[in-house]
Length: 267
Image (cartoon, rainbow, N blue to C red):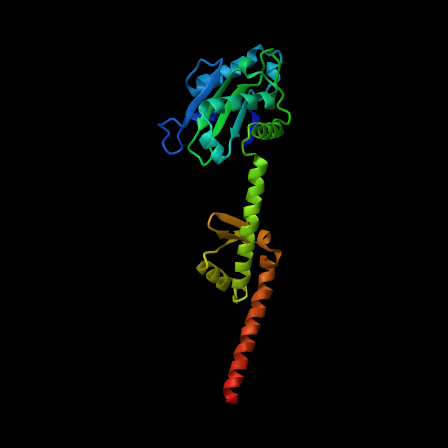
């Protein structure tokens, strides 16, 4: 489970994003999960109510970003199993831990997006609490990350740390396979174009990275959904070192050719 939080100005466009389908803007995206102290149904009505809550704050004029935009996302498998009731409880706990508030006394709006790989919940709430005090946004992103991790651990959900460790382990194995394959291809390549052609036949994409001056400054290696910088695979295969590899291969081929010709004459 991962969590995000930031204080935002509260534009109508931001709230519209929650409702508009990516492919067809005439359709609503996702569905309403829960709301508290909110009467409006339309995006602009919801945002207006959240911002109006700041009117009772004596320091309202000093609040530049009037609402919190929060997101929490269970891992793919957890998201499939969690009910709406459970997602609501997690959302309230996420607000409570991250912002230090009692959700029952706070206006908020929750909406689920279930059209991506991982189901996730968007939450908007006011910057002012029930006592008219400003809710601090200091380090709120780090607090969101920590609270999401604590909640996942408490409820036996997959933690972001576990996802990252698994991803690193998978990437480590993939990188080793790619490294071995690239070295085999390079051992038989005599030029950059030759290298790209041979790699392509093995299902390995080689994509140059171009700097602002239009010059090639490096390259990336792409295999299926994986995409790595060459230096992340092996520093011995970075662009500046390939010319020497190609030269050595050309010289080696020339020597072999000369040797074979000499053997032919000796017969």
